[in-house]
Image (cartoon, rainbow over all chains, first blue to last red; front, side, top):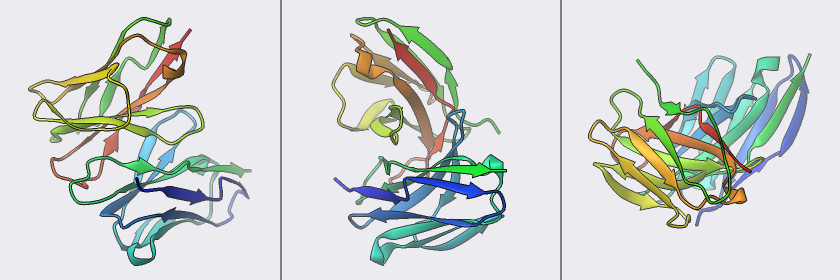
Length: 110
Length: 113
């Protein structure tokens, strides 16, 4: 099956800093989602992004499907950004399941 | 507009017991998927239900079974619980069709003693 790799596995930032999280996938995908899992376990949709670039406030995402990667940018980080960021992909026509990476654990310190 | 709701939030069981977890999809969604998330890992797909039928299944034993009701809500049943079944169980809902974005509930945290 498709493999999803995220980097870095862990990231510590000072409040106000910027960061880039990367997601590589091993095969062509029909779609991709980015999620934030907060310390209470809630999995929150950030982006649904098969290709191109989207922005939502301090967050933006870019997917280059032909090169099999996606990037999540966090600018002016806040302590509430802490948690685990997951990339998940749908692969193949007729796919109904998301395959997740292992996540990037982000800690933002004051 | 209600999101995905799951119950209960926490559950403690012992080995060998059976458990039922419940999920109501986001308003307007007709498809429900279940995922298992072990500590420190990403969620793993268990199965998806649409029109009261299991449409796709991940690599889980048949101790894991499900059901979808006419109102689109769903149950996940796990029999003969093992210590390794301790995890966060997440329900996701979406519109019918492949590659539709999935919206997740807050999960049920299951602990097996």
